[in-house]
Amino acid sequence: MPKAPQDYQARYPIDFADIDPATPHRVVQLYAQDLGKSRGILWLPKKGKPKTCVIMSHPRADFGHHYSIPFWVEAGYAAFALNTRYLNNDAMMLHENLLLDLAAGISYLREEEGFEHIVMLGNSGGGSLFSYYDAQARTPKGQRVSSPPGGGPPDLNKFELPTADGFIVLAAHPGQGMVLMNCLDAAVVDESDPFASDPSLDMYDERNGFKTPPAPSSYSKEFIERYRAGQRARCARIDAIARRHIAEANQARAAMRADGFAATAADHRNYVARRAMAPRYMIVYRTQANPNYCDLSIDPSERVVGSIISPRPDLANYSAFGLGRIVTPDAWLSTWSGLSSYAKTAANLPKVTVPTIVVGANADQDIFLSDVRAEYEASGAADKTIAFIEGAEHFMRAGGTKAHLGDPRPRLMEVLTTWTRPRFPA
Image (cartoon, rainbow, N blue to C red):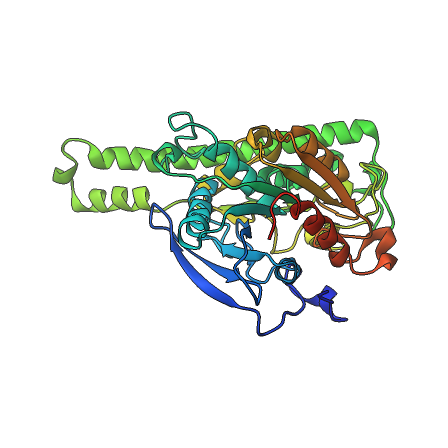
């Protein structure tokens, strides 16, 4: 069984530790039906051609060396790690385009590689992505999403979306927008000023129950209710800003199509054309502010104080790096808005009827046990299973109050391969 080196906790968190260099694999270049380009790595066992392939992908992260791959190959399965057109770029990400990348990957595995069974592995942001994909794939043409939340292409009714046969929901987001809305700092009062703040809504103010990590905080029920309402209100304000920017660009495009535009002054034509082309990038400050990070009595679990980004979310909240930090208006609405994005796991899972297993990490600091249970309940599969991995943080490394149990990945993969074998033989 694959084993992790001593420094695996310090490596890129989703990478496998090691793999036999003789393991067959090849890089696959794909073009979606809209000609968007993505790449994948197909990993195969040393002997024989498997009947089943596990496809894994994430909206922006590199899954080419996902930690599950050596375990799948050892168990006799193929693993296809698909990196989307938005690899390391969530600033312009439209989830609707991502679905076309998944369609290209599944079509390749079916038609060119001839796999009999395809199992989707939706890990982290891949969970909401595959949920959205499969829900749309099982929706008849004419009833699918016809445009992203901000408008424009793609119209999913115009594309073939081949279906898969099984679904592994692994430490999966309720939706990237839902996660972000729950960690938007509700105290922000000016989107152009990261320091403009309402102290009565500041979860990092000791007067509201905050204690400097690693000490746990304690927030009142009344504060949490006001804070969650403030987060939704802030998300709505950012949505309104995004829609205003999109409307301005649309007005410029309409002006270019108007009669007589070609006869206007060159300076005017150039200005309008540039305004129609250039998006206004949005900076979304302070996105590390979920009370769950600091108050461990909220949705109790094995987690410790902190987030998957930092043990000091109070400081990371002001850092340059953050979820959805720099985005186009269209990307905000499609991916990062908890109010507008269509990529909501619980909303899409009822349409996903293939055999499904939902797995949570008991010490996860961003995907909470209630999220995992809600995903299981929302699943439309008649054959569905739920499992929890003790001593595991979000990336299935040892973490939390039961970190002493050691590397959780072998235990996780025993659960996944045991679930997969009777349903989808290698």
